[in-house]
Image 1 (cartoon, rainbow, N blue to C red):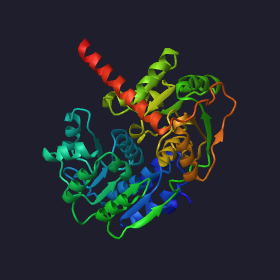
Image 2 (image 1 turned 180 degrees about the vertical axis):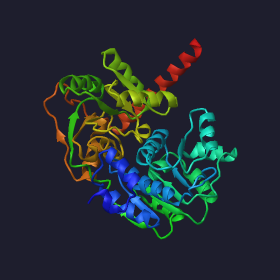
Image 3 (image 1 turned 90 degrees about the vertical axis):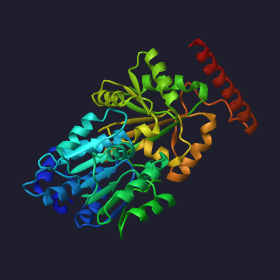
Image 4 (image 1 turned 60 degrees about the vertical axis):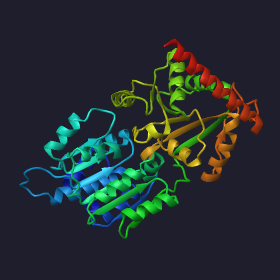
Length: 410
């Protein structure tokens, strides 16, 4: 099936041709006609399935076809809410690409930067607004945004929204939206709390579900290195040197861990940068631009910051830390092998993470290929419960001593 068979208007088809989009993905084939018919949609789709285009294309088409030819100042008629700044920017960039031959006006707002430029854009008038919850409610409180003309509401990455503690913001927002509207709800996972939220938002929704979260793209090859925690740094350098990896997205569990990995790599003359919540927004955007331009070899990210990173033809993903939630692993490696491209996911597993691997394989119903022949094999055993307790106590003590000493020096 081609995009032409989905009743998409010529200006959007022309923009899709510019992007070399010929065949819609599964979620696009299912969701676009339903949205164009005016249905509320409940979509379950993991990263890399073409979800953004699935809702952005029909939203642009609806606005374009229903906007009066003589309009004094565009009003906000569609609101797209998403959890992270990166994801908001990515969605707005895609709206720009898909709608470039239409007269649809759009803007993106998010926190972490001064509001003046965003307010100026809003004053010019926009049809489609992409926003993160905090900045949206803030500018509404200041009187810069009215939701009374909203016809299409999209809540994207709902599961991450709840993980990040935005539930109260979302509920406040729902009270301010017009009752009569079309609503689209997308989430990578559908636990009970997400389904309950969807019932508050949607009216007789059509359900669209593709690529269950338990599965990984067939185009992604997965490899596992068992090693010791103390050897991970050396093993990472060994992999980067021997595998001839041009670029890689590397996942760390913590923000401090991300920064530490970057420092270690830079000491070895490897161009690396970190992206996480403690970085200023302009820093994060610059790092992403440099990575997309090929100026950075290793981009180190935490899970929350990585939502919204969309790199075409990214081949390698490395799990420096194995996630303790199996579904997170699926999302991580889905950053490679996107849109049918080949991808390679490498995971470095310390003794304490062995159990996480079992959970991942159980969820995916697939064994990860183990790389036996490497110079840093796993020789240690996982700590017992008592050893772990003592280790955590010692860790907290060292942490307190560090901050006490730093405070003294200041």
